[in-house]
Amino acid sequence: MTVGGQEWECDVLVIGGGPGGSTAAALLQRTGRRVILLEKERHPRFHIGESLLPANLPIFERLGVADKVRALGVYKAGADFPDGSGGHQTFRFRNALGATPPHAYQVTRAEFDQMLFEHARAGGVDAREGVKVERVDVDGIGQVSAHARDGDGGELTVRAKYLVDASGRDTLLANQLKLKRKNDKHQSAAIFAHYRGVRLRAGEDAGNISIYRFEQGWCWIIPLRDGLASVGCVCWPEHLRQRRGDNAGFLDATLRSMPQAWERVAQAERVSDIRVTGNYSYSCTQMSGPGWVMVGDAYAFVDPVFSSGVYLAMESAERAAVMIDAALAQPQREAALQARYARRFQRGLRVFSWFIYRFNSPVMRQMFASPRNTWRIEDGVVSLLAGDVFDNASVMRRIAAFKLIYAAVGLADARRWIGEWRTRRRQARVAFSGGDTPVDPA
Image (cartoon, rainbow, N blue to C red; front, side, top):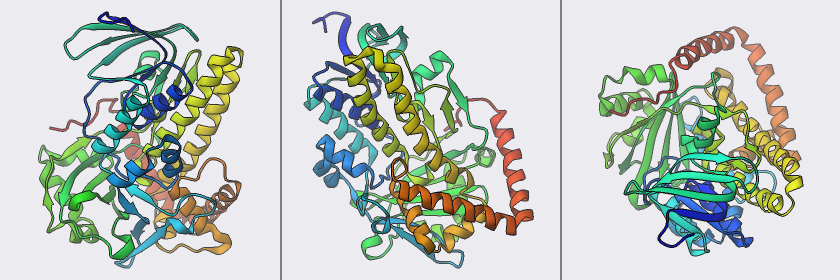
C-alpha cells in the first residue's frame, strides 16, 4: 500500500468482511500472501443467520477462534421439528454418522462477524471497514484492479494478483459479469426480530433451534445469549406482500397461525426493530474464473431452513484459500484447481437444496414428524443437519435411501402431493416474474 495515497497493492484482495471473507483472508495471510480485506460497512453490523452447524467447529479450531466462538455462543445440541400431534421431534447432533462434533452454537451475528474480522486483522490482514468496492476489472492472475470509495467518498484503487468475492448477497462480481440466475424452484422472503423472554426447551435442549411450519412457509426460534432469541418467518413472497406496511401485526399474525410457536413467544418482549428481507434464492453460472473465485452467498443463496449459510461460506472460503495459494504458486494449474473446488462445493449445495425445495411438502412433513432409523437413515439426516454433506460416503448412501423412501411415500399419496406441488410452482412462477427487487422493509 502506498502510504497516504489512493492506490493499494496486494497479492489477494478479499471483498466482504463477513464469515467467508474473514476466513479466506486470515488463512491466505498465513501462507505468506499479502491480503487486503475490504468491508463496506463497519462492525458490529446486524446480520441474520445466527444458527451454526457442528461442521463449523473444526473450521473454528483451524482458524484458532474456537474459544472465542464458545464465549459468544449458546450451546446447541440439535434441532426440533413439529411431530404432528402437538409435540416436537428432536434431532440431536450426537446421533450423526461420521466425525462431526456432537453440538454447535447459536451466535449473535454482529458479535460473531466482528470477532472473525478482528481475528483476521490480528493475524496480519490489512482489514479495512467503510470501504465499498464499486467495480472490479479481472483479466487473470496478476491482473486484478478494484475501484472503491472510502467513507468520505474518496476514490481508491486496489491492484492484486487474485480476487476473492465474499460480498454475500450483494453478489458484486456476479452482477457485474451477469452470472446471477434466480431460482424459480424456490422463492422466499423473511420477516424477523429479536425477543427477550421466549420460552425455551428444557434441559440440554434449551439452546436448540426450533422449526415450525405454516401453510405459506416456516418459522424459526433461535436462542441467543443474555435471554434473547431470534424469531422469524420465511414466507412465500406473495404472503409477505399482504403486510400493508404493518410489520408488527403481520409478524404476530403469522406466528399465531402456528400455535406451538406462538405459545413460546406470546409473553416475550420484542427488543429490536422488525426487519424484512427478500430471500430470493439464486445461484451463479460460474463460481470462478481466471484470477477470481466466489465464496458463500456471493455464489449461491438457498433458503436458511437447515442453517447452512455460515457453514457454506466458511467451508468454501477455507477451500478457496488452499486453491488460491496453489494457483498463485503454479498458475498453469488454476483451471483444474478451480474446477475441483467448484465441483465439491456444488455437490454439498445440491444435497441441502434437495431437502430445502421439498421441506414444506406433505411428504417431508410426514417424514420429519415420524422418522425411522432403519439402516440408520435418520442418523444420516442428522448428519445432513450437522453439515456433513461433502465427503462422507456413508452419509450420502443414507441420503440416497431417504430420497427413495421420499419418492415411495409420495407415490402412496400422489394426488395430494401433486396438488400442493402444482400450487407452489404456480405461486413461485408469480413471484419469479416479479423481478429482482427485494421486499421493501418499510
